[in-house]
Length: 171
Image (cartoon, rainbow, N blue to C red; front, side):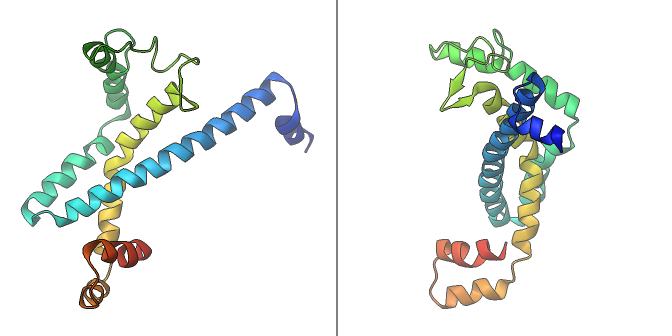
């Protein structure tokens, strides 16, 4: 019990690192979960509304980052985030902006109170999990009984009301 008290109240280096790690985990969760759901759910709704012939192709395209190896994803994003010659740095130079010294390791780069490295890692995480979350939402959308949606339409609900009051609660 004393070790736990030391972790949460102590002033040792390991206690400070532990508290910072817990804080970073909560911050990452607060960023990643809403962004993951907020991007995957609309895409799942769009994919469910396209023609049956192209539905499988789009599912494959969006699921591709999930089946791509983590080493390949790391290499791709290391080229995107490279400080001097990376894709993002080059794009910023093209529009006349000054890119940060380092996208992933400069602790002084903070935007809206969030370290740039945390933003960069969150973007990669959302990109990697986007396809998986989209497929999960597609399966959930297919599980919503059509009778409820038909009843809402008969009662005069528009598409937005049908989605907000019928589909979202049943998901």
